[in-house]
Amino acid sequence: MKNIKKLTLLHSNDMHGDFLAEELDEKLVGGVSMLSGYINKVRREERNVIYAISGDMFRGSIIDSEFKGISTIQIMNILGPDIVTLGNHEVDYGLAHLLFLEKCAEFPIINANMYITTNHKRLFAPCKIIEIDGMKVLFIGIITEITLLECRKDHLIGTFVTLEDAAEEIGRICNTYNSIDVDFTVLLTHIGFEEDKHLAEMLDPAWGVDVIIGGHSHTFLTEPAEVNGIPIVQAGIGTDQIGRFDINIDIDNNCIDSYTWKPVPINSENCPKNPAIEQIINVYKDQTDEIYGRIITTFVRELTHPTRIRETELGDLFSDIIKDALGVDIFLLASGSIRTETLGPIVTKGDFCTCFPYDDTAYLLYWTGAQLKHAIMHMLRDETFEGAHTEFYQLSRGLEVEYDQTIHSFVKFNYEGEPVDDDRLFSIGLQQYHFQNMKDSFDLDLEEVEKNRKPRVVASSCLAVIEEILSSGQHQDSEGNGRLVIRLAD
Image 1 (spheres, rainbow, N blue to C red):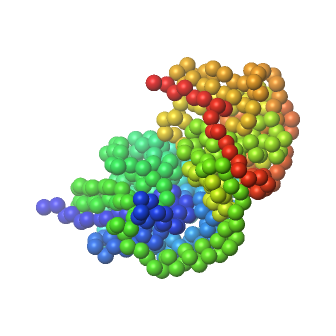
Image 2 (image 1 turned 90 degrees about the vertical axis):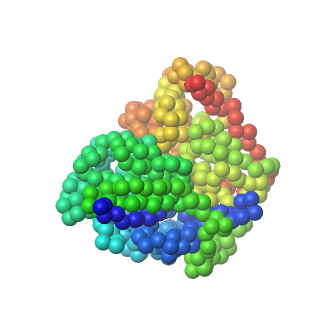
């Protein structure tokens, strides 16, 4: 007779400071108060419950940004996750600040990737065994390569940069801890859904990895993907839903006997509120409302940014503002800098900072026409449209690109109505992160670009530039089409 025990494994990812519930179709949706209410409800109903977060607790809300993550940690302490791994946005406030926030956390944070380059000492515990009802559940934390990009200016910090390296590290940990009779093994990753599937293919079944809970790509699933016998799941983005595993574990053979998984909507119909969390959130909200409640401007209508991989109305507006303010030929604005799908028609400072929360400096550099074409071609490579989490950019006024994915070629590549000459030199504006990671973002070497002219900082705050221009005029509008036309392959 099998020795079976049940484990209920709840999980979130990419919460991005999504603390507040929103009204949708006359009912409240999301927010950590109802999320906490649901978790506590499950903890009362089920015997063995573990709640895990797979990265990116931080960034995306003014409450998080204003208090540099301290508010998030306090709220998360009340939410009470059993285990958390790091996401790329956990390092947005700097590595030293992240280490400070870890000391404030009343829950374990694990990561097997980040280490000090001089002696290869890890910065965080790589894994944790949670013992529950006589079961030993091993969690291992794996982070995206983007963390290496964020920490690139700090040469003392390194991370494994390939999936092969990550898989090897997972094997080393599993081999070490399986000897103490681990009953169940969970990978908490922050590398994106497609990369999770590739990673699963590399894992030796003898290592005993049972489940991969992922993040980073904001993938919403209705059922797990199974690769190499390993269920892979994500729970979208924010707090509008939570993932739920109900797993029957074969204790004798240390494996899954059977399981069910589903995304659970967090709404007022099935999730009670947690008054303690609401009280804490309201304290922070009252403080931020005083600062961020003033109206910056009004638009003619609501402007949109429905997807990060095509030209959008907000993308056109923001890229044009920075281009004109800095006087560059072309400003390439990272689509991921815009974090909400809509803005306006009335725009408060809070609305704007939630929409555009990342405050990078702006760099001026020079590309030839050939380098510009190569950069845009790299942006439009096939994997961009196949679900991979690649960088994408909004084009400022004057640049007109038409690309045919079937023939992998430009049908049109004009600047101010004329075809771009390969030898012409263009002044280009980039945000700091994308300048520092030019090879990854555009497949261009900084050394080659510096031969054109030496790059330099031309603005210390892209956010301040956009806010100043928005504040100076009302009734602004943007079309969001005509600059980047993509003919997708059938």
